[in-house]
Image (cartoon, rainbow, N blue to C red; front, side, top):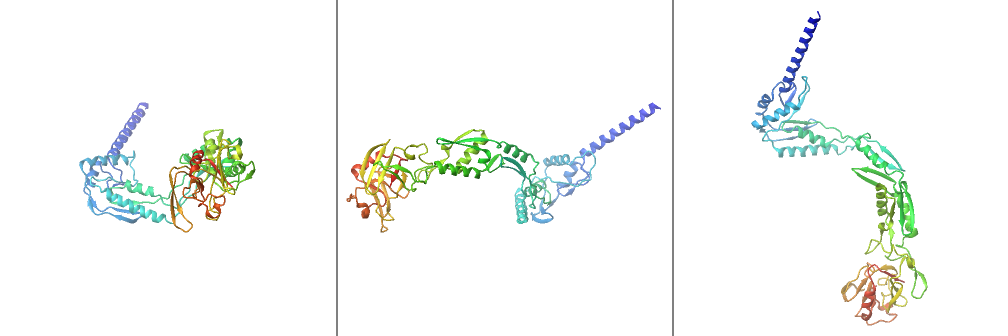
Length: 461
């Protein structure tokens, strides 16, 4: 009895193996029932039979977007060569299933004479149609991680109604070769809070928490925590994005206490008197809020504990890098400078605290258009020889050749020789002055030129 059962079981297993093997062989060599290639039914056919059936087809290619015709090509006969038969073997493998399937599968095989230009035109039409449909639709918003108040949180995604154009183009590409292509539109999907991308954003932002940086400005140190530097931060596409509004308040305090740009200077004149200049002028420095934000957030990212503010200063006028940061003597002006006393029509040139030259001058005519501006300026550059160009009070133009030119304002004021001048009296500037420049006698202008240097302060009072 037992031998009979064993015999029947062995036979049953053998039969199943034969059936499975036969089914596998059949499935390997035949398309499933509801498979089409280029809109032609090939269910039950071998790759070769399908090739023979499809290769003689002809007609126009029609492209539909959600069943709406958006493009139709010119009619043509598909030209498949014997080399194209391999493409049908690949299509057979693509739809393979171990058990027979009734699932509708549409496959496309490009013929040898496939018109790529027609496909490009179809892509343009599909793109145009999708963009037109998207005009009044809302785009989805990806989830993202954000740093605030020294904490990291996740902002959830927001679904939209906008159609996914790339998905539509991919469908078109996958069906290229078919005479009827129907593209089904799908909405764009936002990046979810659980995605690897958002999790990575969160991990990167966590690195910002609890950091401290010392900011050195001249001889003072300021200790900042992450939350005092960064108001908000995100991490997108491998890059941090910072809002440093919190730091801006700190930088304003530093500039109020230490910066010199746009402020009056205390100054000890040649006579020993201490004066306060006007706040006008271009000489000085201040900390740039943007530069400070960049350098301090970079320090947090790199684990740097101290940042020197000298790399974050800015200025105004010809030299925007800022001047006088390292100068602490003479209230920030230093010991090398040019001093212009308008009331006495006299100029003094100092090197390392020593007056190396003093000279009579003629400054700008004493009217609103030509007055030499008061304030602390700086020598922008020097040029020898040069040609000074501008307009006279009557509107006519002038071009005056000079041997020595050292401008200190962007409006065109500077030291130069004035060979054409005959009136060198102390009161010449009242009615017969310059257009704002400091006129110097040719016999002494050369020495003044060589005593001056680029970026040197010029105090006019």
